[in-house]
Image 1 (cartoon, rainbow, N blue to C red):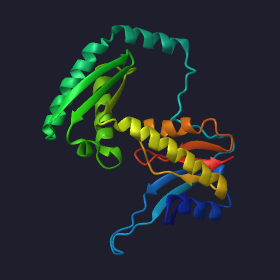
Image 2: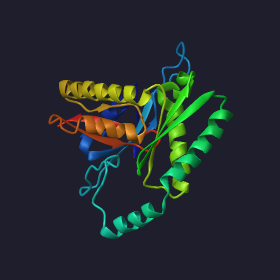
Image 3: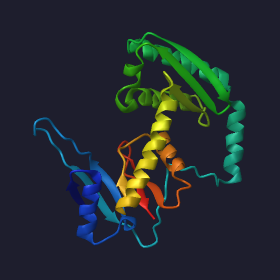
Length: 236
């Protein structure tokens, strides 16, 4: 495997494909470094990717999409675990945990807990510091959500998803992701080349996949390793 560089991830990948005389669907892409513009010419970094040719029997798989086909034994085990989990108790423990974390971070807030069903805990964080709580590109609230998920998983609630929200951020972000998906698809079709999006958490990548699932002109898949895993939107 060889590392290729470019101003953007897409440029770096195209450099590698040209050098290897391969097409996009013939390689696995690993993102080594995200590009940085730097300041006044200093600290500028090129994007770096690593390309590896796929084996002839390898097919593109998307680990972000759900895989419902599981064995009956797995379903039975999950059902047994679900019956032993008190979601209300788990959610209350999570609320107490979040309360301590947010206080330690210096926030003034109120938590509004909503059990949408036995598989979903929604917590709205009411604060006048929502911009700080959300963080740049949602990094802070996403990190807190990931931390919350780990917390309840350790309580045995592996089949329960946590969603943290503030100032209707999730709804606004979802609308922005749909618009991003549509714009990216148009660019991929117009240029006839795959487009690489910036890294985003798995639940946001799924929204991109879903938004373009019925688009007959493009395909989507994910590549790279966390936390630099990205979505690729490519023309069919």
